[in-house]
Image 1 (spheres, rainbow, N blue to C red):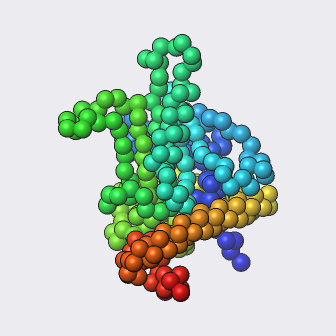
Image 2 (tube, rainbow, N blue to C red):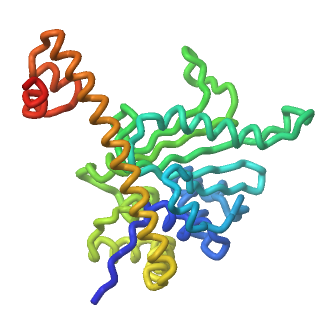
Image 3 (cartoon, rainbow, N blue to C red):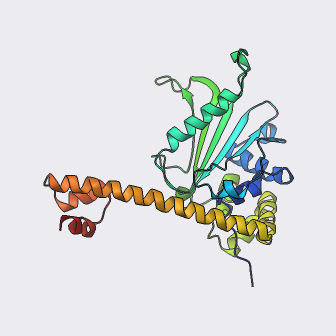
Length: 278
């Protein structure tokens, strides 16, 4: 009987796949795909930052951020965060954590010229950026002179897996990032997985690591605990959102708005709104 494939985007498993020194090559390969590094610019080595032990307390913390951090040879810091649930704050959240990393670059009284570039990469399992592309990259550009960049110290990526999965045509043979996003799909078929592993030795190495993790009892135990924690968190966010929508629907109904318009405004079903009216 085949083992159930672990979800690569479970943040605990994601860290086990990319954040440990023995699998550093996986992280380097993924970053080269996201950053679209050409041969001469490709990352060859990285320093893993803040590689603390993932304790049971941290795994069960619904608010814990299990991001992956690394530093390149030139001092550039890279932070990768995986988000599976839309909390509608990802733009502000990523700026906040980018700012924290940027601040950590320099000691009090040190020359500002010593500040190093910080790159944040948000891998999302939901649609967020209102553009028709699954990978977006942001810098500080002048409003009218679009080709003038104030500084290259800011670089923020959003990689939206849900948009990628909706693509009718994919280019797995030539696009490394598309191969990684296909690997992250928890519902990937055995045939597609085999194709990926034949196309890309880095994907093959990552899948072999995933298979190894699926045979480790301690890993499975913590993985299940984290899945439960994330599920409870998602339910909590969904409940809060529904309560807010119901509150708005009641106010709009009291103002005399028709059922169809309330449904469009709140996202609640027409049946739900009729029940509220009664």
